Image (cartoon, rainbow, N blue to C red; front, side, top):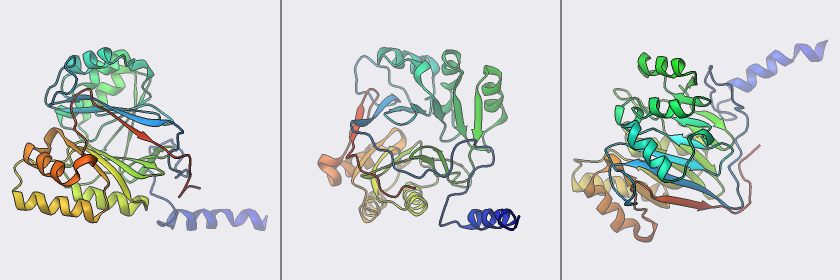
Length: 287
C-alpha cells in the first residue's frame, strides 16, 4: 500500500518537469511520451499539392498552400489551400487517393489555407484534423457536420511518432507549424509564418532540442527590405538551417536572396514539386 501511495507524487513530479516532456493538449488522445525521431530506410516524401507558383504543368496553381507528407507513421495533409476544386483536381492528377490520408494539419485560419477542407471531407471524413483553439466556430462545425474529428492544439504537442506541432504561436494572427524529427535534424513546415519565421525556428529548436535540417513553406516576407531579408537569412545560418524552400507568401525578393545564399541547398517550390528526404536508419534523442 505504501508503494501505491507514491504514484500520485511521482506523476506530479513527472508532469511538472518541462525538460522531460512537452505539455500535452488536454484534448489530444495521442501518445505524448514517444519523442523518437522518425526513421525510414527509404524516405519521407513531401509533395506540394497547392501553391501559387507552378512546377508541374498539368496541375493548377492558385494563391494558397498545401502539401502532402508520406513515409511517416501516418500520411498527413498540411493545410488544404484556398479552393477545394483545385486541391481535389491536383490530388487526382497526382494519383493521390484522399482516402489514404490519415491526418489533416491546419496551420492557421486564413482561407487560403483552409477553404479546401470541405471538399476534401466529402472524399474522406475518417480523419483527425489538428487545429488551434482560436479557429472560428464555423470551421469546427463544418468538421463535425461532415462526420470527422478535430483536436485543438494549444501547447507544443506530439501528434504521432516523431511528428509534432509547435503549438499556438503569435498574438494577432495565431499559427502552428509542423515539426518532423529525423536523424538529420528537424524538418519544419510553415503555413505563413505570421508569428515571424525566425521566432518559429527558435521556438522549435528550443522545444525539440535538435538542430534544424530543412525549412519549407510560407515565410511571410513579401514587402521586407533588402536589409531585413539579409538579416533573416543570417539568422537562418546562425541557427544552422541546412536547406530552405520558401514559397507562397515568402515573396520573390526573399526567394532570390535565399537562393543566392543556399545555392544547391535551395529548394524550388511550386505545385507538383516533390521533396524526398532520405534517412540513415539511426535513432537518437528518443525514449
